[in-house]
Image: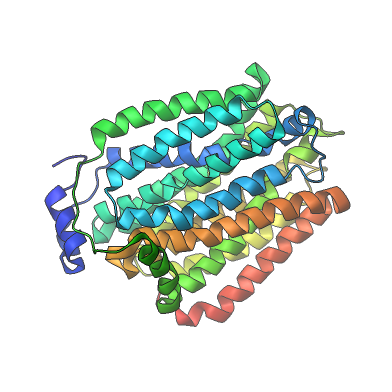
Length: 411
């Protein structure tokens, strides 16, 4: 017994999905450790969002195209999802997780010491590529959890991801004001190293029986899953739309908040990430509702809240309180749908959870990258009202898509 679950039962589950009911649950301490690691890893992608003005000034990149920094990171995150995450179904997951985290540390140091824009972009690309360790952790946690508590475990671990995304802004803002933007990436590299040391002690040394697949066969099977599993297709499109909305809010938010008449400091701007955490924590319960068969109802309610959130966010320049309400609603909605999505797709194929996660999260990455570049372009040409109209339009499309497809999913 190690980390609150049975290694023997884990092996049986990998060999034969029919024995899954014999698994014991993950301990809460291990679940929280996974959530923390996920939050730390994914935060590396989003540190740049509140620093866009700093990066624009230091590397002489125009405001209208500075969003490309985020887009490059998201594009390579998408490539990592497709090329690296499926390896969790083929290789030793403990070694895969630790190896990717060590390489992430190197990428963070490259960004933190970059002197030229080309080096910055290269470092950001590597950060995005290797941050997919979060999804290997989610798939591993889903395998370790008992079937009756899988939604709860996935909800907590996934909440760590969303909270990491949100706190990245607070962390980056505070450190930038104290020691400059480079300190953000160098401190993160140090914290990642500490997490690796903890995982070396906590992660179980489990050798699994896996199918004899070549790497190309493994990647090809990800696409086959989309053909075979309708629920995966539907939930992946929803992920693309809701995370486009997420990026449409958070990527350009620093620009109006740091500009006149508000002219807020990076530390103050970073505190808006703390506001978003409240919504993300509230939505962590969505996994429990999905476990009980209320996944579709949760999705519908969350999509309505997502649309309503933009009514409040639109008043950013008139009322920061309205912005706070909008942020809470948007992050609650996005997290609730995301947890529900993963709770619904991970049980589809017990032997292919890493590949299911990879396929699903590719759409997440496409949405995030598209939302980042579209929002900064929209802000440059149409201001904050244009950004809010874009966000509300995507929310409406997501709601209509769910209405048209809900009858095709069981719960």
